[in-house]
Image 1 (cartoon, rainbow, N blue to C red):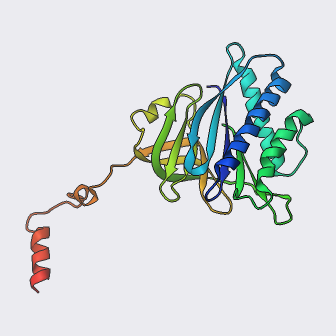
Image 2 (cartoon, rainbow, N blue to C red):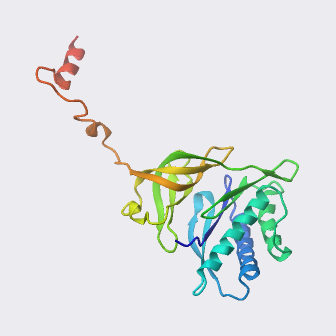
Amino acid sequence: MPKDTITLALSGDNLRLEAFAKAVSELFSLLDSLSREIGGREQITWVVQDLSGSSAIAVIRGITPSKPELVESIVAGYGTIGHALEVASAIPYPDRVAIHARAIADLLRNGSEIESIRFETPDQDSIIRPQPTQTFQPSHLTVAFGAVEGNVQTLTNRGGLRFTLYDQLFDKAVSCYLRPGDEERMRNLWGKRVIIEGRVARDPISGRAVTIRDISEITPLVEGGGYQRAKGALPFKPGQLSPEELIRRVRDA
């Protein structure tokens, strides 16, 4: 299954449209210059696959008619750039590429309302934060196997299968990546509440889940009626008092 999507996520309260528009503009320039650096004259189209407003997340998918492996190379290059920004190391591409990556990271400066910027691919995440000294602080996401409960909001099987889960605790978008061949597990789950188990990457400061990969279990949850589903949970034996009789005895005591 092709790895043909990149994601840019801005985190912060009351993000202004101006900042998001600037980030998307630089993202376009970054992908355009990176595509020319890696793919030469090969024609690659980048389309918007998903936009999540609550977390200012843009998911972009690459399309090329003849060389899908080229898109995967560009996606991997995007991940490499994100990692370089995260650890404050040199970006291993010419200035015509690096200048746009630095421009995205520069949105964290000068009292911006953006708290962090995340570069995401199907294989990796990198998070960039500012320091009070106006330099960038390496702040790796924590990764461990776990579970996240939430609602499935965005589901697509065009190219690789990626879906968005809005977690119950923070009400923020979580990017989820299924393993190849697991498409059927998501059938009829759009808009449903589920528990997703897998390798969960979390923001090291807030503890919020941002991605789930290597998904091992997807459990649909039945909404409402919990007390009704509890009926019959314990076996009834002859001679025992019914729940109604027990309640009446306690009430009349």
